[in-house]
Image (tube, rainbow, N blue to C red):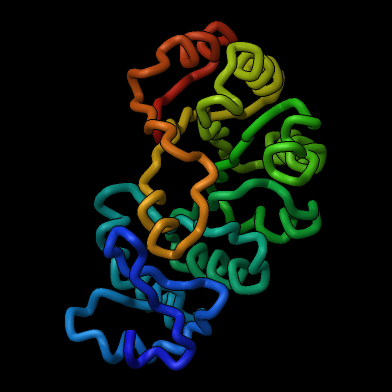
Length: 241
């Protein structure tokens, strides 16, 4: 607290130290000073070569487990040139490649990725365009159109639904998802990802409001009827993913 040049660390009424986000410049001075190593900068800039060195170090494990490399995020499509180069180099080494995405990107970017992708993990948060825009701030028209086009190409696709209580967990919403996905070809499976509140403590430490309040985490067995709805559309359903 004493060393911070921006006075961006404070103690709240419960005695918990918090980072004041609007003051913090991510200078890292507090990290160097903290004897308990209670702080660290998670986001670090890396070159393609540095990332590939880490990937190649685990190649033996990929070979034995039939696993591979997954680009996640944020959304890797937002760092298109970097992500594309990683995918190219992995494919040259024979490493299985996967990408997690919201799907909200141009088809031109998707076309550049496709020759180097084995699997796409594709979020479909809501089928209703108005609700999608209400919850996320953008329409889902581009997302759904990209998904339709992807399923016609030579790449495996797993559709994923983050199940958020009070938002997209109604029977109507799940039926709409089932109808949409069942009409697509080449969908390997659909994953239901139960909401969890693991990030709540981080929001509190950063002095930010946690929009989900005290909503409890869902467990895989909490809402079995949602999986049953999707199975009624002859879909292969997995809880988690």
